[in-house]
Amino acid sequence: MSKVKEPKPMSAAVYYRRTRPEMLRFIPTTTQRVLDLGCGEGHFGAIVKETRGAEVWGIEFDEQAARDASTVLDRVLVGDASTRIAELPDNYFDAVVCNDVLEHLVDPFTTLKQLRSKLKPEGVVVASIPNVRNLPALGKVLFRRDFPQEDYGIFDRTHLRFFTRRSIIRMFKNAGFNMQRIKGINPVFGPFGALAIILSLGYFADGVWLQYACVASPAR
Image 1: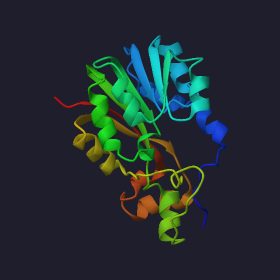
Image 2: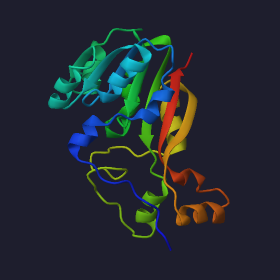
Image 3: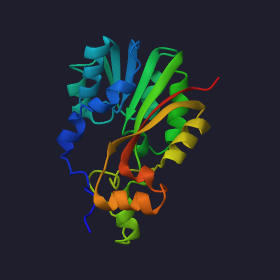
Image 4: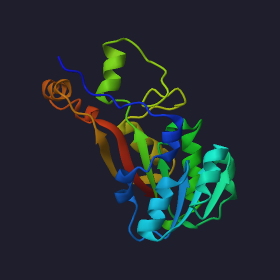
């Protein structure tokens, strides 16, 4: 039986240089001020600046990546997100971007609560979050009876949290946000995946998505 294709590993350098063009469509077209949390070398933020004409700030823990980002973004803060967010102006940003960031945080719930005050009243958090229920991951846990520690991907050893679609929605709700949109992205296809969906009567339909993209706004 054919196996579901798994994402190829990437080097640390490539990790910080990812452009994530598939996330651009989730940024509101009227956005003028953006915070890119975990901005890496600033490549996604640079695309937002080019396509939206927006002012883009970044927060990045890695010092070298932050230095590179500072050459293309308007302002970059270096260090731990929970500390640096407190230094940001209140009611300033139209959008806060969290591309593959929240799963790396010790307490993403508190971080999201901190971000609420930094958003304008109509602002949004745009996030990309890995889906632990994707079929390759389930295959490793259920059939290989393993929970590996890897350099990248869903089993990234630096991941501190693991999410499904339901738990993503719950996290944002508990942090005081309303989920406006959540959509599976970066699908994984294969004969085994299609068969699993059919035999489960759709129960594993969410297993074809490596990640979820979501847009959430502060609850009134």
